[in-house]
Image (cartoon, rainbow, N blue to C red; front, side, top):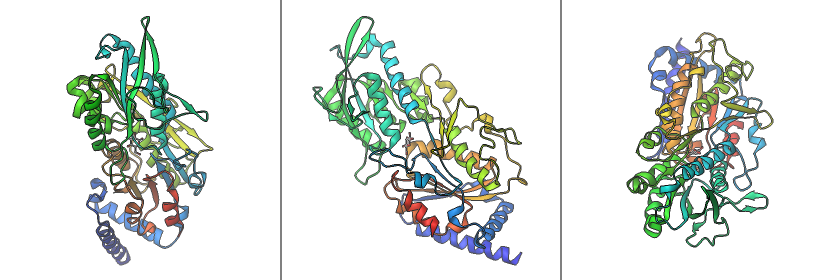
Length: 442
Ligand code: BGC
């Protein structure tokens, strides 16, 4: 007991000093309050710490899940198989970027077709759109830019792949990164033009930046005015900044991605639509693969195969690619037709919402980071979901929020990996897996 108390005190001191070292104003460290509140769980935590400290499992052998940003080369998209195979309990959890991107493009095209009588605001026969790009080196962002361009006929190919480079301004349609597309609707041919697109990166380097998108729409609306018929965005964070800043008042349909609760609610006010990347399934998978690895059971438990509590996922919501060590959730379009079913993006997915038994699945400590505490999707949708699932899976998760700019802002707060039983990592840049694995290999 004495030893337990001592290690508990040490753990507390360490936790305090780790938090203190965190520095910067935008850093956040939170432990799920329900987990932290009970003494019983704190004791469990201390026991786990003892086990981990006694060196039974090397950090390099502990379960590791990458999520949301897949280890890959940010220029070529090639997967970083070294990171994905870091140890035998390493996985990636994300979603099917291409299927989702195609859905987003089709959703926008369907909207144009259904509203062709009113969409062309200045009646010049050209349907103009502007596009907010999240991160030119992020495979999800690249896929969404391609999906929109391909559905609207504005895509051009470079070396066999659709060019996803932002055009800057393309007032007269002369950009080489896109072409003017054509849509045949009810016997009339319309031209579709990408008037402008830009990576929304702020001066400090944070990508997918909503405030930058808010500024961009002011500039774009000042130069293009009623030439803009559609606003498209790689995500809802940026989409909502543009909607609230300009398009809502102008009645210009705006399309995003993620199905964040505020964006879904805005559909009632004219937001055109969004895509759910099934974050409720992804957040579950993120923690479930760790739980299974820690329990030493088949990785498919509670995933493709029902666990003893009845949790199971069906093939219509995810796929697993064994070679890539990757789980991908499937996407669903959210439009005026079905948005009422998606109003709260933080509700756990019912088929995997059953509590695990605490005796057979004792509490384990997980270190988890979010690359940017200010990212709308991760902070408003993904993390609340993780916090719901960590209780159901008996995981005591420490949540670290980064500044979205440097890996070191996050890795500095992984001072003592031995305190944890497993790790869940969301990199700032998809190329940087080694910044984390080198820490775990020490
Ligand atoms: C989401 C974005 C988010 C990004 C962060 C994407 O999957 O759609 O909203 O900013 O992940 O990595």
